[in-house]
Every structure is written in structure tokens, then in C-alpha cells.
Length: 399
Image 1 (cartoon, rainbow, N blue to C red):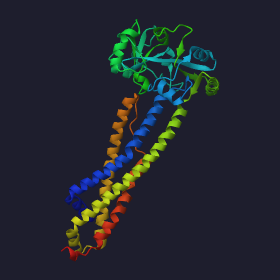
Image 2 (spheres, helix red, strand yellow; image 1 turned 180 degrees about the horizontal axis):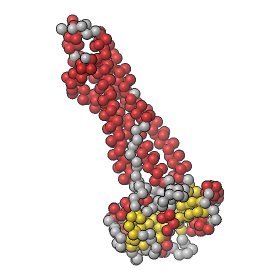
Image 3 (tube, rainbow, N blue to C red; image 1 turned 60 degrees about the horizontal axis):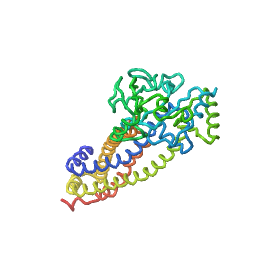
Image 4 (cartoon, rainbow, N blue to C red; image 1 turned 90 degrees about the horizontal axis):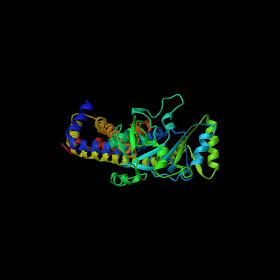
């Protein structure tokens, strides 16, 4: 009986009910969207760089070194002398040493000068290679190129196609088109296309580092590398080499996990500030619910008086108002959860496309759900004054 009365009341004031549901849903979604996107970004960034053990780059900001060499989002700090790479390659503690050279692009996509060792990178020693060919083969000649999955999609290049590179880490397609004809004489030929990894290097075009040196006129004495990916035979070897590198004055050894930890602290601080703001938004939504309940009580004064005249007690009237509020808030929170997740999923997809690596779908955790469920007690608390007022009103006033 009570539930039937509640449903009838909500249907009678359909417009007010819809506005209340919309307000609660928007408040709930607002409290969820940014944390969901940030957590998706955190997981995606960690997954994208987990294949890289240690990054050795020029002295400077470790964060910029990671953003430039691993995520291809910023220009490199500087180059390293080639003897740094040679020393690492000859060191008996080294398992895999991969040189990286940046500085050219094709239609705005970075060319990555490296060696064939890059195609043997693995997430774990027993795991299959991280980079797997979808078509063709790895480069062998000086002017052969292997396309990342996204690079192949965006450029339209296919096996056997040839292209000229342009100078610069970043360039628009218009800038690249004007520079290509003057950058080099010999064209690169596409010999392979990689499977998508979901990482930032899907945007890269892999070419032999020897071609990089030749294009830039770097002789044996002038050779440089932008960075080096290093893997030791044992974990202790990795830390020993990293300490030796950091004690020198030419380079720094960067552990991506440490950079993520520092960045995560900044993200957590931002999330805490946003969490306080979202609580304010939820409190405003609760006030909106209370206002809606009060306005609904004014509209239903004659109906409530009639119920009282027919024998309904004050407890029933009071319970109807609270149950009506609870149902409205619960439906609004449910819609908010769906809306917040949907907006976060769309935002993660757009952000991942812009950053150049895959962001996993957002995950609703218990702490985030608990945050929006605060609207239930807040809404009931805001509805108490109008509920008490409705229960105490005399039926004689409105009959």
C-alpha cells in the first residue's frame, strides 16, 4: 500500500521527479568522472611502460626523460655520447642494450632509430616478444623501416612503400610535407608492420640507427644516441649499473616505476582536492532533493489531508515522504553511476587517442561507489524537515 502511494506520487509530479533524478544523477556522475579517468590513465601509463626496465638518458628531469623516450610526448632532453652505449653493450652484466635515436618524423609521427634488439624486448624473460610482426619482417638494411600499428593506420603506408623523413621530433603534416624533399636523398622502404601493443610506440616508425647517423651526417666520432634501454642479467646487475651511471656526469639511469610513484603522489593530491569538491556537489544535490520533497509536500497537501481523514496515521504519512525520497535518490544514484562510467569511458578513449597509448576501461571501485552512496543518507537527512512538517499538518486545514 505504502509503495503504491509512493509510486503514484512520483507519477503525479513527473516533471519534478525527473528534474530531481537528473540533479542527483549529474551530481553522482560529477563525483565519479575525474577519479575514474585518472585511475584509468594511471593503469594505462603503467602498462604501457612495463616492458622497459631501465631508461638511460641525458642528465635532467627523469619525468621528461620518460615522457620523451618512452611515451613520445616531449622532445628529448639531449643526446648521449656513443661511448656510453658502447660501454653498456660490452659490459658483461648486460643482457640487452637497445639504443634509441629521436629527431626525425614522417607526417608528424616519430622515427625511432634503433637496432634489431628492440624486437626481442619481453615483459618477462619467459614471455613472447612484446613487438610482434603482423606483416613482413624486421629491418635488416640501412634504409628499411618497420611501422607501428598506429603509424601504419595513420600514414596509410604498406609493405614496399617508400617515404622520406623530415627533421624534428614533432611536426604537422604540412610542415613534414615541405621538409621531406630536402631532408635526405635515399628513401626508407617499408618492410614490416607490427601488431598493436596498446603502447605509445604504436605511433613510431622503427628504422636502423645506422641510417639515422647517415642521414644526419654523423661520422664515427660524432655518433650519438638519445637514450638507451637497459636490461641486466640479474636484478643486482641492474642496480649496480644504474648507480655507476648516476655517479657519472654524462647520463642518468631512470626507473619508470619510480617516476610513476612520484607522479601518482601528485595525482592522489589532486584526487583528494577533487574528492572534497565532489562532497560539496553531493551536498548541493541533497539540498535539491530536500527542496523537491518540500515542493512536493506543498503540492500534495490536499491529498495528504485526505489520507489523514481516511485514517492514515502520521507515521504512514511520514514514511511515505521518506520512502519517496529514498526511491528518488536511489534511482538518481543508479543513473549517475551509469552516466559517470559512460563519460569516463568516453573520456579515457579520447585521452588515450590523444596521448597515443591505450587506456583500459574505467573500473568502479568500492570507495568511489561509497562516495556517491553518501547521497542516500544526505537525501534522507534533507527530507526530514519537510517529512515532519507533512506529518504534523492538520487535515482540517486543507479539506
